[in-house]
Image (cartoon, rainbow, N blue to C red; front, side, top):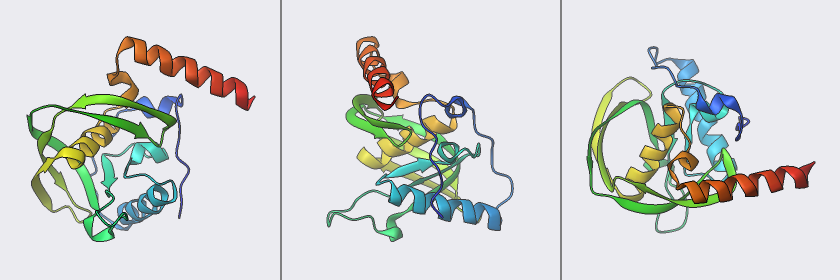
Length: 171
């Protein structure tokens, strides 16, 4: 089922998500619905808070060399913790909750992260490049943060101006 994605400036996007304690059918249904929602909106990642569920749950599925998202590559991430960060990189990010706005954000180039899968099994892995960027972006959502909070003051002013203009056009 495709869920509604909440968008900026919805105050729920700044809510800090809670740890998952029960790994059951309702969690599995949430993960499955998040996957359908992410694909329907052409996203590569989605945090549960973006569908108004304040739980430490996120998914990531990057586009492969053939140009499609292979479900075998899907990461279902519950209760993630970054153990280590290395290097820095800059990437032009976008967000399903901040539609039509893209800006360069600096993040760690590589991270080591520990999380649980849909069954509660603990996984620890090192991620690099876009995998690391996407994980950090989605984990920010779990902490109640948006990528636009990581951009410079001038770029944020540009965003605010564009957002207000779009709001006026819709009215």
